[in-house]
Image (tube, rainbow, N blue to C red; front, side, top):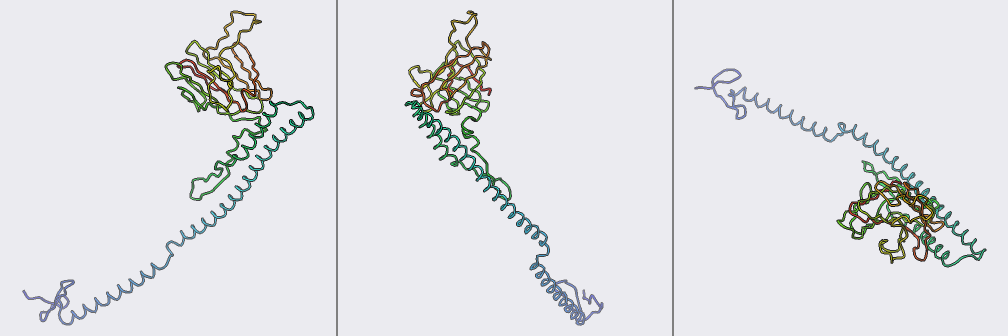
Length: 333
């Protein structure tokens, strides 16, 4: 079948385009090529225009402006935060230094008073040495923990966190809330370390001590007990310079009570003096007068014991022995 030109519909010398596969005569094949050439020029211009668009940043300019503003705002926040951190650090250091100075001056007044009266002994000397050593230790270790807290955000802001609020200084008369800490034997701690429970099948030296170390002031800790066996738990103190073992009666470092002593002047001889489940008890550590006090609230019984600094030097810590499996003690305040 003879081909004809798609434009003029004439037969004759006909050429077929390899691209569009259409047939053209001499005249129209030339026009077709010119049209392809124009389209090529248009594509080339469009390519260069697109290249120019790529080299411009109009599309992201809004975002770049926002980033620039964020950078400026962040730098201002960082400068202000750094200034506040320096100020807080300075205040915290001055506060710690002033408290230590106040306590140091109190010790010095006590020393001068005893010197004037010529009324001092090895007990006083040892007490002053321990007190000064404690102050020196607090001063050295007060900034050993990392006190800078970097908040987790797109901007690493910093602020001063005064971790030293837990120091045993507020003229050494204020301590953090008591918790249980060191354990000997099978003891389970719960309720944020405020409850200790004997978990052994039989008593095997189940001792637990408090976390705080006491050298100054007067401190009271109230407990509630649960008793499963026939034996009372031990309530008292030990010196922090020795391992916890108040059950060993030969150790000189433990002071306290396994049971309330019988009062010969008690009018009601039949009154039960033993400790029962749900009884509340208060242990008072009087560091000023070197004595401890134990109060049994149900029977309104109060007993005292003087402490020898030579046998039980400062700092003291609370010591409790749970004798029977299932016995537990909770710190109330």
